[in-house]
Image (cartoon, rainbow, N blue to C red):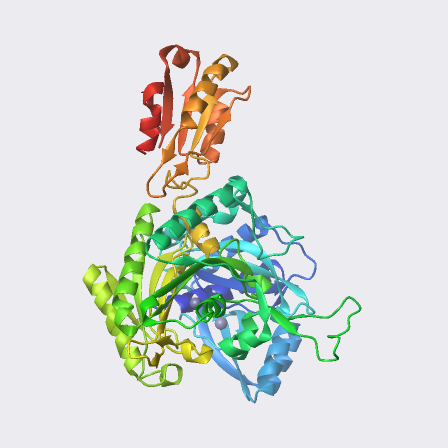
Length: 604
Ligand SMILES: [Zn+2]
Ligand SMILES: [Zn+2]
């Protein structure tokens, strides 16, 4: 019979343990679950050092065990017998697990044994199963021991550090090969590695993990993205604001963050004087929090004075940096951070205006994706599920109906491809999300448009309608770069560090063939200084450098390729005589007359 891949993976984990025990009889076994793409097993090798060579031996032994076509047989022992048996085998970790199960009320403990063709028992592991029937059900060519890692017993840093052996396992060799290839490809595109080699950003231990520093080139990339998105949003009537990074607890009590989101926030800053005393009047010191979201700040802009229907839709935007407390183990490059910036926008809108507001934003988002060469994305229409999740969504109100209808009308009118995702809406309203896959195949939301009809009443947000009555507007949260940082990580990985010409931090590099060409290179520079791109970002002055080091041309070209420079201009003495340059772009070379260089670059 054919078994699910998870069963095969876990069965292989038993074979790994069997191989380890035959090669290292003193090793003690801990746990060996199946995981995405494979499995692992944790061992205590008792001071024996294990390296990549040992992994090869273990892998070879496993293949050998598969060939023996051992059977997997399940059986159970009463707790007492199970513990006695495990103690006799010195399997301390298994003893502890059996006792844990007993403490939970289990009376019997499950085991699996492997049995060779001649009927001898070759291996026993305490386990609930399930397993394949025999090792012939496993494919010896579709698994691979991957790497070693350290892991604390039970994840507890006060307990022993064990050796974890990770393995990849699939149904077929083709799937394994494809996965290995994808991981190698992912490594080449990993934004953390490219971020370092291209000098885009750095994560500095002394500053703190999850708090990226943007180096000049990464900052230029970010600034160009921000300028473009500001230009486009201002063109659509958004007004730019600045708001503080911290605020009193009162604000986040009202917004509901302290009640519902406190786990994701940093601990408060208490306002005490330098002697550590509270406020002078003897009251408890005020508490301030780093903002986890920008919305409550933007509401203060709206609330600055009474608003009339004539001002609606009222559109605000800001590059607002927010701070969220993430476990250190989950932090990763620019994707999972503790401080990140959103190009956050909020629109205070009459319900009748939602169609126009969302339609404009959606078109603008799609345009930006095009300008940035992002083609591989899906638009997800995140809907409520009143039937199965009333707890989250409550009842289907008029507001829900109106906003779902408006959003669907926009999606249909624009003729964009999208899919419905029930139960993915926020508790406060439906969303349109732009979904992408990162290089590791994981799905991420890059952009989002969300209707919210629950927050306005909490802040007393109203507008004066035509008849003089106070009405509650719908609020639309939107962020084309839900996190500027994550968006950049995606851009870096998408094309392995190659950016569209207009956004590249260094667009052009002049390379001299010999020192004799330096005077002519200066002339080329003066032409480049005049180049200003107008699309899609207006007044985008050309960013270029000159590599006039006394190095070989080959070396300079290779450096330019490492730095992913879109256009390299090669100038030698012959070019100086001919008043031309050799343009090297996208792996191809062509000659362009100096007199035509400006027009040539402006057309890129
Ligand atoms: Zn098992
Ligand atoms: Zn918001």
